[in-house]
Image 1 (cartoon, rainbow, N blue to C red):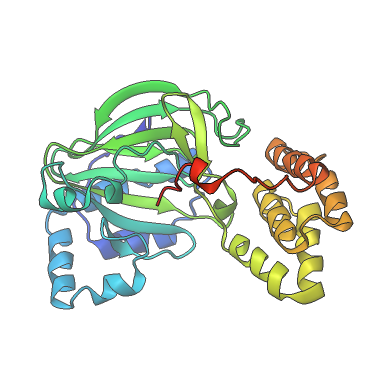
Image 2 (cartoon, rainbow, N blue to C red):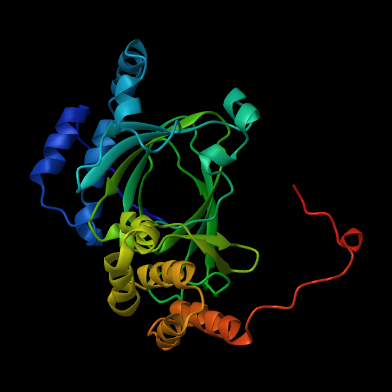
Length: 317
């Protein structure tokens, strides 16, 4: 489960005090001890019982213009300090099952019942209410193969909640949780660690019943541009995407580039040679995709189905 941290003592501080401290401390989000040492600062902000309500009231008077301009997390999150490449500070709202917002929208917008890990570390502090519940698991995210359906080797730890004043460190690619609604409306405070590598570190959703990885949740901004370059970039774009298939250091980009090339070239001889090269990739998830494509191309187009239309099941809509 997430690492429990002694919140320490110290007087309450303002949000500006916390950001000034974080700006002056050369912490490393990938060094567990370095990042955990920031926890007591978050706890001191958490002892400031008035700051969050004051910010919320000011934001309401401005019709939420500041949150609308900078907050990319959605309505569950009140952004306290926007991403700056090193950290993010936020407050998370956790409504109870019977609260009107959950009754109206269901649990999905609050990520209740979604088993997942994180590709970044973050500190969390129970600020208000009894705290949300979680089923906690652990796994070694650096050793798993990572493709959908592969064994995650999850280990169940316990069900617990983020009690008021509780301070924890969620460790990247180690702690997995399934968040559940609190008994009453609750609020947590977070410091998220940021690093340029994080978009290239996979985050997963899990199938708890099977103990497997269900799907990857991470997409780097560059991945969205690959298909555009392949389709609209002419020869220069195709050459670049082919280079990514062959040389990009991250397997997720190699898979994305391979699929982009296939969507442009179809099954021509050059594409078959590229797929055969990818079938010997160093990463299993790339090899599996490429070998499926090789089998499909070698099998050729399937025979058309001439059975009567009324004998086929209706397509779901």
